[in-house]
Length: 366
Ligand code: GLN
Image 1 (tube, helix red, strand yellow):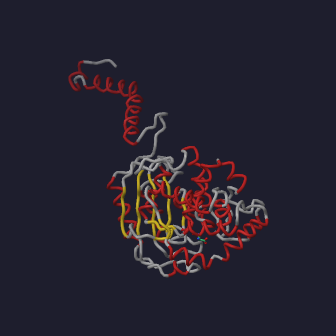
Image 2: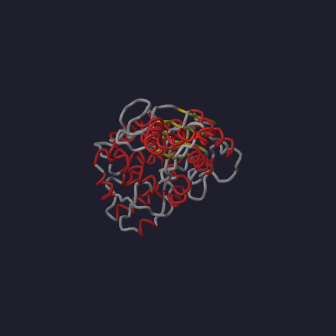
Image 3: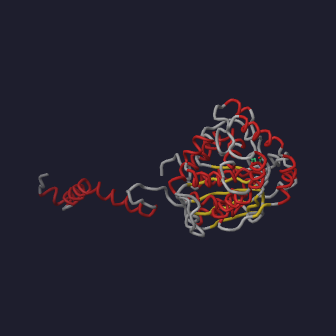
């Protein structure tokens, strides 16, 4: 650029300053950007290998998400309590609680988060953890199966249709067969392993709700038929009646929504309870458990669930539901009215809302 005295008079050194500014932008611009994103990644949690993790929500984001999810769905009347277990039909359908526990052990809760309800099928996750820990994942792959049935949790058709019979650890067939893999000299010894595992995930001593246990024991004829059918196919690995009783007991364990969220946070935290710091399962096994929750956790509704939340989850007919955000937090909800597939209506909606609001969907880019 030739600076005539006319130009100089009119614009002074402005063109020079602009040129120098542009030169710096082009030369160092990339570097500045990199530094910038490295800085914000650091803030959001950059891993040692350089991979950027999704932003960790701030405490007020957790609180707001819980409050809105609670308010938004507390008055809906869809769904119906499970009634094939008489006790469950009598639980107040208005009860509603949501809890988030982070991998740092922070707890956010709203509603009836301290009410104790029957864990039911969510117990299947922890007995699976026990068996994987004792026997490795291969035992589950070979003796149970890891495919979805696409059918209801107590389906006999699924047993007939699939060569694996047991199909996966979260339908009743596979779950009861998983209990049959828990070894012990006596029934009590087997039970101690089952409840001991749940206790280590919850960080406290859980108890069986005797009324639920009695109610379920009197009416579990269908489950009895399933264990005998599996035995006839050589896909059941211990005494059918004794194992069915252990399974019924594990389903009758009473938990609060808070307990459930701590249990889930243990999985989110790679198998170590974030409150007690005690290990529930080896970290290397956790992705297998979560994958099974992703594909089978909500039975025939698992596809829709994953489509909406992008999270591994597990439900129980007691009204509990649990979702895991690996490396971050767990969301637990409780509300007894269920949809056709046996999943809590409010619980699903609440978790769907929270997953979206807190950008928890595992399939979205940070
Ligand atoms: N105990 C219940 C049953 O065996 C558990 C079912 C569930 O929660 N989906 O039927």
